[in-house]
Image (tube, rainbow, N blue to C red; front, side, top):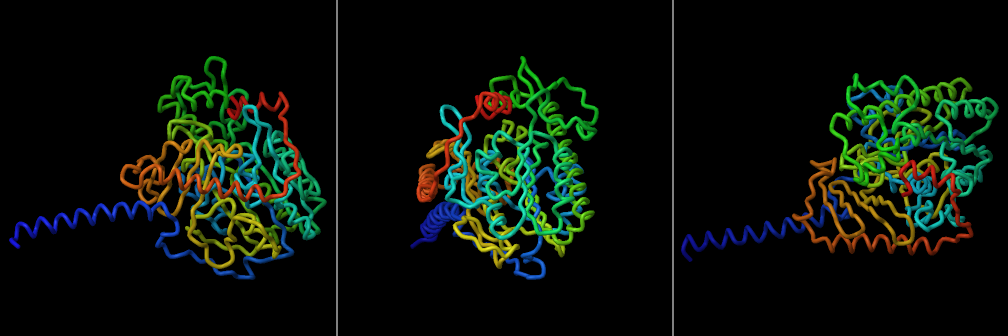
Length: 479
């Protein structure tokens, strides 16, 4: 064989090998089971990670995107107290929600069931709402059954309420549309008379969420203009009679003129201004725990149901499931204190088994993984806006290296988590055909729906009042 001919064969073999390698890499990037990352390990230390007689304070900050916290690398000083607390906490760097909807996400958090598995949905279109089924146990029910005094206070009376199952397991429960300061007053009064025995406190702050009255992001405090830097633009929060969240919803749907960069930056600064307000209220809550003598024997969990889009993908609010919406903070401050950051990919479903393990409470029928009992396994994390049986307008799956995004199971995006964490450069043309991803997502949906069918459910459908529907329209949830 002559040299030229030999070189041609060698080049041909190299090209074939490269094509096969790229195809295989595409599959491996998508398939979490092929991840070669060494599994993260957090060794179980009974003196830190276990306390059956300790209290648990669970704080959910609605609509707080992880990337807007200082302890997650944000450039603004939005969370000075949480940053300080996180230095003595177990901070999960890569925590992801399972739904961008407030009610559905919280249902997953407190049951450790995926949105399709628990099946709880909010009213939309001609569909009634559906509460958390009785066949799955909530976080509060576990604690109540194990002798804890349980108290829940939420700031979303329309969804996080008794009708949807959020009062189950609560000795006391309130759903009040008030700001964090007013909620703290209620909690402080409760703590004054309920600090002598172990308790579980569920506290939901809604202040970071867009408002539905005059301006999208407003606390009516000094923090509103904390980061605006003398903005000189014309953004007022309204357009042709539509204001606040209703206006953002129209921007998200593209039915009104888009915002210019200066206005987007201002809107982002206003969103950021709400965060230090809540940070200050959390600081006061921790000071109160200390004042009544229970801080040193309390596990404090801080997380969010979902984040917020501020034009990163051309939209607003939280109707998609890209990084800015899916990535949420997860911080656990243990009574004896431990300051470390965990890089493993985790999800909201993992919270329930983790806190129950801390409290030495037995549990079953959960989909999440305890984060304090040995190694944290590599996994795929599914997040979706799933409204009912087989309707998931947006669905995504993440592993350590890749995100795959689906819209109506018809269009797809494949993004590298290694060098494109913001998910802007769609690589689908370089990897597997769309049908592969469609089949993967349909397989996941079918699997979760089968789990749902096995859950005993005697709950009653929830019909939203006209008042609630009107409010949801202003918040952009209902069109």
